[in-house]
Length: 136
Image 1 (cartoon, one colour):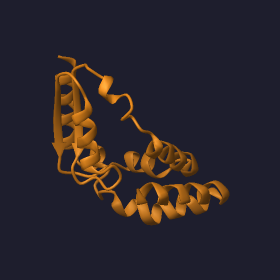
Image 2: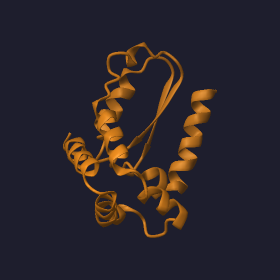
Image 3: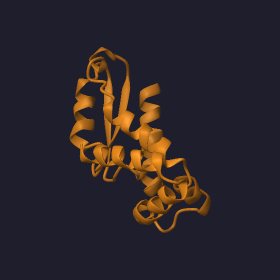
Image 4: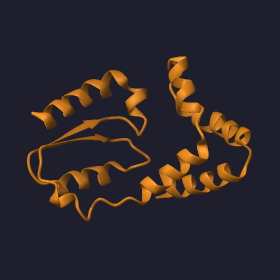
């Protein structure tokens, strides 16, 4: 996807540029996507990373393909789909859900890839419900 191509280019840039430049870029671009009411500690954890490492991890995640073995998973499963996700498209998330075997339940949140911390009041209870379902 375009997101992972951009991420790969950012990873290369972050790897070969001084850390202050990649941090400045992250602050300028990424911080705009974060809610203004984030706790200062959470904000610092999201903004101060080794961005080259984070970006390369994202690139590797984007290459990962579970479709070859996901049909073999035949256990009770719960999947949370972020329906407005621009990083991992919702239809891709839902497709992987359809490949799972056994008892399964899908949970949908009308949020993006960052919903875990941009919508904790919605995401948290849904995550708990999904965990309870999967472990029952």
